Structure formats: C-alpha cells, structure tokens
Amino acid sequence: MSTTLLAVYFLLFAFLSWRRPLAALWLLITALPSYLIRFEIFGIPFTLLEGMILIMTATTAIKKIQMSFPRKRESRPVLTWIPAYAGMTKKHLSFVIPLILFLLASTISMLVAPNLQAAAGIWKAYFIEPVLFFIVFLTLVKTERDREHIISALGVSALAVSTLAIYQHFTGWEIPAP
Figure 1: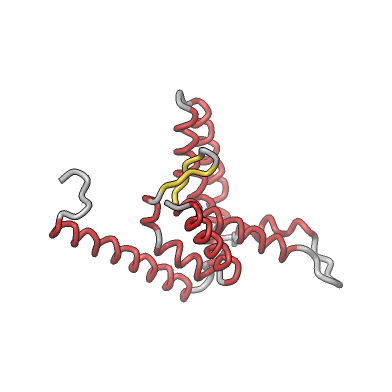
Figure 2: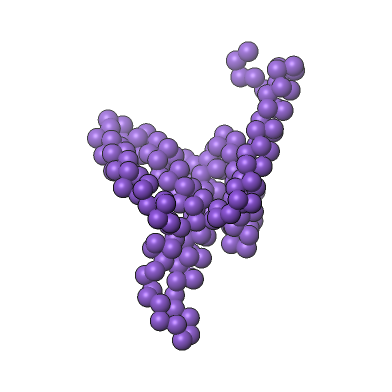
C-alpha cells in the first residue's frame, strides 16, 4: 500500500476523531475488516484497524487531558483526567480489577514466551489494542442513540463482508485456495 495514501487516510481519520469522535468510532467499527490491510512502521507490523484504534485512543486521551486542565477561575485539580479518560462509571468499575489482572497475565505470558517478537505482536494486537478500544468505547458511547449507531455500523460492516462472500461464492474471485 502506498505510504502517502496511508498517511493521508490516517491524517483524515485523526481530523475526524478530533472533530467528531462518535463519527470516527462509527467509521472504525464499520471498517473492522480492515485488519487485513497490513503495513509496517519502523519495522513493526501494523494493520489499518490497529492504526485507527491507536489514533482514536490518542485523540480521545488528548481531548480528555486538555479538558481537565483548569480554566480561568476554576479550581479543578489537574490530574482529574485519569478517571475522566477512562470514562468509567460506578457500573464499569467492576471491570477494572479483572482487566488489570488479565493484562498482567498476558504481559507475563508474553515475557516468558520463547519467541518474544511474535509474542509481542500477538500481545499488542490481541490484548493492548482491544483494551484501548474498550476504554475509548466506554468514553464515547453514552446514550441509547449512540448504541444504535454502533449496531448500525456493525450491520454495515457485516453487509459488506457478506456481499463480498456471496460474490466470491458465485464467481470464485480472490479465493486463495478453492
């Protein structure tokens, strides 16, 4: 894939994430099959989906940190962004300790694996990025209407994949091993 095209896509996605985070989340969920588009940055393999998740996480974190700084004549402590970023309500706090233990176990497993490079790639893709997506999701999706938009995005993604699969079934196009 062209590096320039990839850079332009990520810049546009970052702009969308900054200006309309829910629309960017909708696009990210619609683009779930983009995990098949692979590239490397400084020798580290990534997928298009991973890039989108990292951009969403960065823009959400920056916005939450920026909002936490005291404005003129306000006396809010600066570090209020930590719980605010997580988007956690009391209902969500029951996830925190199991999630931390799960990440700790996955990190230990990665560190003792015989092939550290392969284990680190799996750890990044299967553990860290889904947790980052979970935190962004909890931060942004607040109302029933937001949830309905997320379900719609999943539907669009499923429709696109199933349409391609039906086309492949009847034409044999791009089937790696028939």
